[in-house]
Image 1 (cartoon, rainbow, N blue to C red):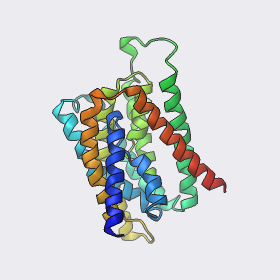
Image 2 (cartoon, rainbow, N blue to C red; image 1 turned 180 degrees about the vertical axis):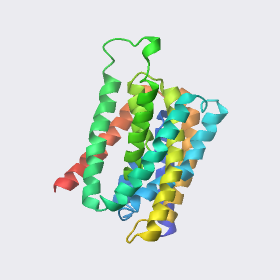
Image 3 (cartoon, one colour; image 1 turned 135 degrees about the vertical axis):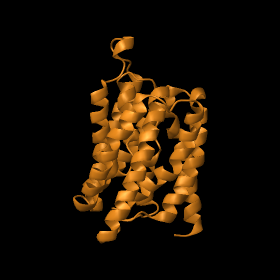
Image 4 (cartoon, rainbow, N blue to C red; image 1 turned 90 degrees about the vertical axis):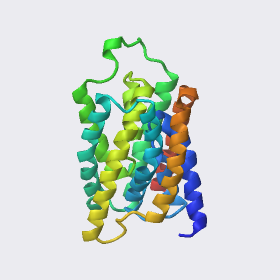
Length: 263
């Protein structure tokens, strides 16, 4: 892969992270189809490549959130401790159970279409009744259980889990300003463990299992810059517009891969 592709990856990572970091998403969920279709990263190597992007890009937004004091509190600990074991399980499933690109594209479509529609619906339609202050957000055990499940999905899909955790928790009444830093912290931690798991599996496996280091680092460097800028811009960006944009992107990408799976 030449330097032109590296620069394209850097630009893709930067632009994606600027938009997604304010809502607690690293952007890997939207870089995945770019890596598959534009850069032709083979499967299942595309998953650890996406996790590598999260590892490099994550500190940008996290540094900004840490300076503002947003990385403290029990939510961060619950999400991180729940997603860590899940991502290892997901990596093993991804390598040994669903290595084929056809099955993987179907999984992408099944995951992104309902997520995008749910994001759009939750943004456009207000809740039927306002939540009381004491009932905002799911109970702690439910948060931990959700984190484990999301960790498994993230290990299979290569997204770290923030794109699932963020919308689910915000949809349950938690503020974006609280959820975004915690979701990104969980994404970073699980991506480190997930990328390491894939690297170990590559030592004893065959095929394209190890991450594509050059592309992952290039996209990650762009995400590092874009994530910091996005986190810094969060207080000044319209929350509703960002959620709608994320929902429409998810629906568009999911529909594309659904069409490719059927055809």
